[in-house]
Length: 530
Ligand SMILES: Nc1ncnc2c1ncn2[C@@H]1O[C@H](COP(=O)(O)OP(=O)(O)OP(=O)(O)O)[C@@H](O)[C@H]1O
Image (cartoon, rainbow, N blue to C red; front, side, top):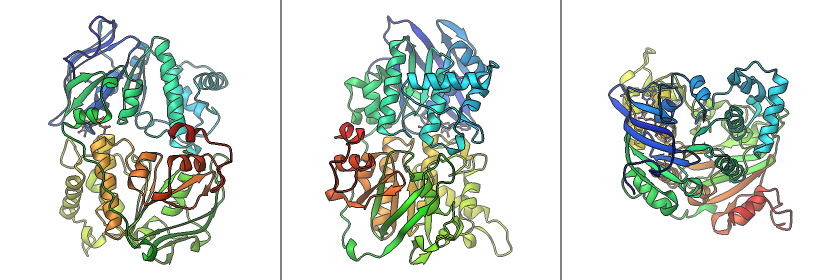
């Protein structure tokens, strides 16, 4: 790892940061940070969850005011007072948590931030043309509420590019993308670099950092701990720099006696009509998850995984109540609370707003999700809330998952993205549920914490629970699953035992090949991941 500069000494700096500091309460989220980004450079910002990456880029984008230190743009000192000001300077940003209105179309959302009074038709046409030219096709007239997380992010990217920025900041852009979508994004970034733009790139995916970034700055506990050329490092050495120690690997002891194990989650001929023109119908889904096993669901985003999670969790009820059974009970007509009371736990893919209420404290979020199941522990007979019990349960979860935070009981929105994810997963694990259903368990989580979450899911299963994991991260599914099923166009393949599964097989199924008919048109993914 190199010295103290953030880019080659001779190169022209587009952006330079000197001694930038941000304090929340008693926590120095960013502590005297120095960073230089050259023109035309793709610069990675690395660090474990809570290291201060998002805080730093929010200051660069005018969304947070620094306590001290300076920002220099093209060599001139600037005080970036708002995101609008940042955009005018030529700084664009794609946020980790999307800031889109669900009830508006993609084009309407874009119009809101463009602020140039152009007619919506013109904006839609521009967005469509730009999106196709950058290989990120977008339907400007689609309602955001009907789009997958990956599609929503595409709107954010196009919205940013429409403003022709000189510096594009991307905060974990690929965590929700499929491998193909991520490849398209890399092509887009390559093109931006060829156009002389600079990119500041935050990611926990170290292989992609090695692939696309020229330099990296590593943060730990708010401080710069070094710079490096990621291409000269391995994913393991980058992880070590971020965490400060070796990242342990996940161990999956063999699942024994599964044939006789009790089915705890059964899905039988689950059908669901498409609720909107943009959603996917579920067709005759059958799946059994037994006590002791982890079953993974792979699939390209937007193939019905969200609709499936809604149906299985009880966010949307089924007319056919026998379509879903939890611990031998037909639950298709039960809501989330009813299913939780039977011992099920759910972690949705969107952590803010869905997995947690952003403006509520961690302890309040805990009460909100567990008051029905843990009523006795958290609410007295007289109906009084047992604050102490809730706070100590929240503390237990914080310790179990190593959640890093700036206050004793902060609001969920004050946690870094990865730390909030750790808290939400821990909140459900803490109940030791009989059935755990998780959608994207390690989205935005650093390498060390991801290993912790994956290990915890395996241990939950081995202690007798049934664990179902929906994930776009194939490596993750191969690491933790005892069997993998693939969702394509609302249909689910049979679950294939992990010993019989290969990336090629999963890739073909993800592309729509019938099981046992590999002669079907090969999916692009098969070639990519083979
Ligand atoms: N608005 C806020 N109020 C109080 N504390 C905050 C606020 N925003 C961030 N923090 C704290 O500052 C620290 C740095 O958070 P930040 O979001 O910058 O981390 P990060 O490196 O981006 O992490 P991640 O990889 O999880 O996204 C964390 O401890 C977080 O709890």
